[in-house]
Amino acid sequence: MDVDVLVIGAGQAGLSAAFHLQRAGLSYLVLDGEAAPGGAWQHRWPTLTMETVNGIRELPGSAVPPVDPMTAARVAVPAYFARYETEMGLNIRRPVRVRSVESVGEHLVATSTDGHLYRSRALINATGTWSRPFWPFYPGADTFAGRQLHTHDYRDPGEFDGARVVVIGGGISAVQLLLELAPHAADHRWVTRRTPVFLERDFSPEAGRVAVAMVTDRVRRGLPPRSVVSVTGLGLTPGVRAALASGLLDRRPMFSRIDPAGVVWADGSRFDADVLFWNTGFRAALDHLGPLHLRAPGGGIVMDGTAVATDRRIHLVGYGPSASTIGANRAGRLAVRELQQLLADPTRKA
Ligand code: FAD
Image 1 (cartoon, rainbow, N blue to C red):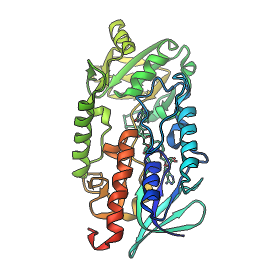
Image 2 (image 1 turned 180 degrees about the horizontal axis):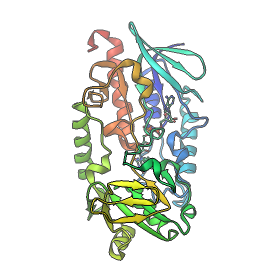
Image 3 (image 1 turned 30 degrees about the horizontal axis):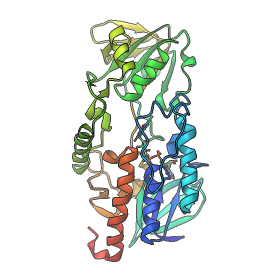
Image 4 (image 1 turned 30 degrees about the vertical axis):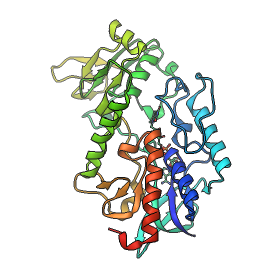
């Protein structure tokens, strides 16, 4: 099947791109690996509500409908996306997972789980991070006798009833989930690689701009992107403030090894644990782009805006600085604007 632009992924980034492609009059198709609308939101843990998310930015041209703040994000956001897809008449095919993309002459050719070949003049990749939970390596992890899980697999604080838990990670998910499970656990430790920075004020637009600029600089240099929170800090909400005052959020540095019974720090101190809960983030899900050899020596992909610097037919949206609902929206618009020019005049190609 031939289109001007193939979009892979129908989360916020892919839907924004589809909206702008449609408006620009380019032929396009979105392939999405999910069985239903909602991108990664449909897989978030049930206790993440519209009140506890950081804020969902509306998709282009359609306001987020009012919703009870206690509604699970995994219900509210997919319902919004489903309505949006229908209202906008977007061209989406699912469930179709792209296995690989190759460059064949002037075209990009995608192979997929539905057995079809999809040929396009350009590609907007919007595959997010959810399918690539990151588990850092610590010696002895494979010997641990208890349970190990990642944010990706978390469902319910009741899973931690009476357990001794080590919560690993310094991001928002680690903090939110620690506060949620602590009343259930028999005991816990919180460990982070860097000393967490708590912001006195809520996440301000200025802090957001600085964070985005820092991540933009990393991807421009071909380094793996870092999460925006890792460069801004954590919001000092009333719940977090109370937890800090009570000692619940007493952070320890990373342990140096894991043994069958628990974790051990460099000074020999230890904590015997039943569960190691890794809230250590996600990486960009880009394995299917492997045949395009886009990776730079720094381990990331050298980006110029949303375009891959070495092949401007390919745009990554929801990647690096645009890995947020607001960033994904903007990235979809920018990618389409550039591709419109490129497809009208292919000599602009790098
Ligand atoms: P996703 O929503 O992950 O969508 C990617 C889509 O691509 C999925 O449907 C997936 O199935 C599909 N896909 C993946 N690989 C393939 C393939 N090979 N072939 C076909 N399809 C494929 N941002 C905010 O702005 N506010 C928040 O409150 C917020 N909370 C968050 C909470 C958590 C726990 C996490 C992990 C992230 C949060 N974010 C938040 C970030 C935000 O969710 C995303 O950055 C944003 O929604 C953009 O999503 P996306 O479109 O890039 O990816």
